[in-house]
Each structure stands twice: as structure tokens, then as C-alpha cells.
Image (cartoon, rainbow, N blue to C red; front, side, top):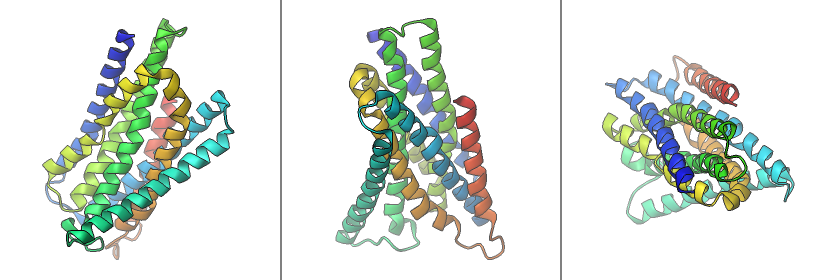
Length: 269
């Protein structure tokens, strides 16, 4: 058991490292360019929308059908709605806290947009938790009947696939933070921090593989609902600001982000 836990930890540390590499793309922005940041903000929204289905909802439905304790449609729909509701409540709580300390949730300055930043980081972090669990479960099953070369290669494939998907997701956090006026260093540090939960979740998934397998479909769809709400409510409207000269610039970013994430997910299975 200790061996599979260590392997799960190493694998999820690798996925976190790729998240950090994606977040590091923000260092290329020496001076924020409104059109370029609108494009990248749209790209981040496209990544999140595609990941919510290909990385989260589709695997959730497949796993729910395999477990067959409840109808897969109910598990996926219930988790999705709960995730969106959780982010809506989180937004209200953050706004309330900001008002209590004299802040605002409607201004355009970085200090006035703290709730938007918290929602963005929280949504990506929630997305990374079930991904870490999935890697942990994949390695945890090696202590049972799947302890073979084929089983090991399958677990490694899951880790590699999730890791490659994490690259654009790291950028999906750091680039919007840069748009809000944060420094490149702070944007990178916050962007990579969203992936730190994966090693923790991976170890938990390996240790409690039987129990985590049962709740994983709900967790996956929960994260999908959270990501869709943030992408539609925060990122897309923000990317459409100041587009008088290039009205389709951010829209093309959304399409490109969706296409890249879909390509990675479909290629890596």
C-alpha cells in the first residue's frame, strides 16, 4: 500500500508542476496589452468550458454508469447544480465580507475585484481536487487485482493526461490575475497554487480508493458546475470589455481555448 501511495504522490506532484509551468506563461507579459489580455482571458474561459465537459462531466457520467448505484444522469446533474450553487453562495459570502470591511464588489480596481479573483482561483482549485483523486484512485487500484504492467501503464496514462491538461489551466488562472493588475510574480504564484491540492487529493484517493471511487462522479460534476458558472459569469463578460475596435478578439480566444482543451482531452482519452 505504501508503494502505491508514494507513486500517487509523485504522479500528482508532476501534474502540479505542469500547472506551475502553465502559470509561468504570464511572465511573457512585460506590460499588459488590453487586446492581448482580452484574447487570453477568452482563451481561459474556453479552456474552462471545455474542461468542464471533457475532463469532468463525461468521466463523471462514465464512472457513475459503472458504479450503477444511482442513475448517472441524476449524479451528474445533481453534482453540476451543486457546484454552480456553491460558487454562487461563495460569491455572495465574499461580497458580504468585502462590504463589512468597507470594500466593493463592483469596481474596476484590483482591490475592488477581490471576489472575482477568489472565485476564479476557487473554481480551478475545485476542478483540481477530483483530478487529483482520479490519479490517486488509478494508482490505488494497483494494490488489488489490477497490480500488473497494464494497470501501471493505465495509471501513468491518467496522470500524464491530467498533467498535460493542467498546462492551459495554470495559464487560465495567472493570465486573468495579470489582467486585474497583479504583478507577474504574484500572478504566477497564485496560478500555480491552484494545483497544490492535487498531490493532497492524490494521496487521499490512493489511501481510500474504495470510498473515493464511489463519490468521484459527484465530485467531478460538482467541479464542472463551479467552472461553468465562473467562466460564464466572470471571465466571458470581462473578456468582452473595451472591444470597440476588435469585437471578435476575445471571442476567438474562447473558441481557441475550447479547441485546444478539447484536442488534449480527446487525444489523451
